Image (cartoon, rainbow, N blue to C red):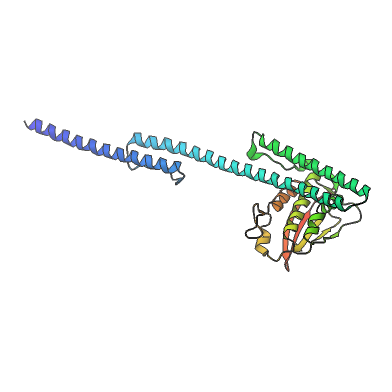
Length: 304
């Protein structure tokens, strides 16, 4: 009889221990379930932890933590890739609008021009702009079909730079904005060297740099716009900017920075200009002095 009593007591103790283990194990798996749900909802990135000391439950938690880390890496890569896709498409779309603006300006010039020789020149420039438009469309198509969109580069690299007369490129570009300047009642003041200024830069990149800077100036310039180009390939674009502060002037080249609160413009033109001049070996800076904003573009000289 005493043996039976002892056996019953031992069994009772074992039963209590088993119940406690089951309760703790159940609580552990409840914690595991809650942690997984939070991880899936991106509400936490804290590794899964359990209060239970059960080795099987802890091994399951460790395995889940390793899988969650890999899942977070893939999620971050997806988010970053999606952002780069959006930025590249937005950049190309922004550039597509610029040749369209130039084409409209040349059409306005043709409407006022009586000289047939000048009309022929305008038609030639319109043709060049349509070629640029076609190239941008091809670029967008290549990007959309690229197997690695996140790392696809739309800009030219250093090796594609070629000797060009930057004066000639600028003259053609500024003329394409004739109608836009006229609409804003702006008469640009331009100082260019009389002799050619040879620099190393991809011609399409140089066009896009000038077009983006001039396009932004037309949006925000208040009555005047000055350009000076020296023999060293340094171009300075200046216009009144009463709404800018030194802090905001320093942010002009940040992607998606907006100059005026509530403006539909994203300031993307300056960002693209910086990317293009950088890959062609030049630099671009801005400074604000006495309410005048100056954008300084330095091209790489041919003999540098």
